[in-house]
Amino acid sequence: MKYDLTKKPTRGAQRTLAAFSTTMFELLAQKSFEQISVNEICQLSNFPRATFYNYFDDKYDLVNYCWYTLTQEIHLDDVQKITPEQAMTPKQALSIFFDRVYQLFTDHSQKLTEILKNNTLNGPMVVNFTDYVKLNMQEIIHNCLDLSMVPVPLELIADHYSNTVLLVLEWAFLRRENTTLADAHRYLEYLLK
Amino acid sequence: MKYDLTKKPTRGAQRTLAAFSTTMFELLAQKSFEQISVNEICQLSNFPRATFYNYFDDKYDLVNYCWYTLTQEIHLDDVQKITPEQAMTPKQALSIFFDRVYQLFTDHSQKLTEILKNNTLNGPMVVNFTDYVKLNMQEIIHNCLDLSMVPVPLELIADHYSNTVLLVLEWAFLRRENTTLADAHRYLEYLLK
DNA sequence: CCAATTGTTGGACACTTGTCAAAGTTTAAA
DNA sequence: TTTAAACTTTGACAAGTGTCCAACAATTGG
Image: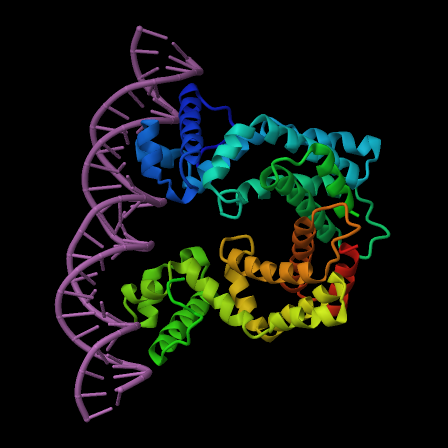
């Protein structure tokens, strides 16, 4: 990402960022990510290509920013803050985390299902999103897993747990539309052992 | 893939396929997959671009073929054939499968470590490889999992198991070079519950 | 309200990608 | 060894990518 998201953006920058990301969402509802070109995004957004490249490295970077704006809605940091005092097990913490993301998906379900009509989940489009979610989960796990008594490296477990949560999310929300939250929790319970 | 791998290739086709795939392996040892262009592959292979596109859709397709040639060495089909008679548990079958892939990695360790100097595992380069391995595992799991007594969809379990095997493989072989096979088996045992 | 800073624009650049058709070459089977 | 079928080559094509720069506009602090 060329643009620094830590500093607060000017009005113009906000307009530009918003324009590009809403155009991306519109295009994703129409065609696959691979078929979308930077030229097209710029035409529809009424910005020149040079401006696009002022903000983003490429279209992957933009879609990544799109997921970022979505995930800003769920406050993942909270899960970690609660942890130390209440001495949660990883399973409990991940369950809270799971519910947050599940809620996010529910809130944006029509947008997301439109996107999924034209896009598979395997492509590079969602890689950054899953990486982002995974990173958050791994921090949570590190914070509440007691490192004793486990015959397996901590990071390996963190990877395994976060893979599992992501799998159930994908399954429950994107591959089986009629999976209830209760079902999803049962699956998670079973798979996390 | 443009070229039909089921029919037996002509001498010329074999030469061409081999030239492109060895060039790809050479280039992967020098730079990252993203930095490699089809032009470059063709120059080093002494073939025109049009020939490349006679055989492959793009460079992803070629690297996919490269993994395919490697995996031809381990006979994954065997694992499945043994199954019905001996009534294996998924864990046992996956353990055999794991050993085969582990062996494959050991056989090609210097080639693979060279590639990993320049390439991360997260990129789209290995996605096709992992998908391929995953597909094989899912067949194995379907063949030897008794569908009763499990409160979770079969495909979900298949996904979860194959994710786990891949994670331990990646961990044991590519992220911790000094993990023994015994360690790896212990991790697998623990994570598969 | 006016300058100084900061951001935006348009066009040009060298480069890559994937496709095509016509000409040329190799192959396998008779 | 010949020949029809199959494959490879060539060069050109339209389109996309990411970078750069000089001209231009917008913002905000003084």
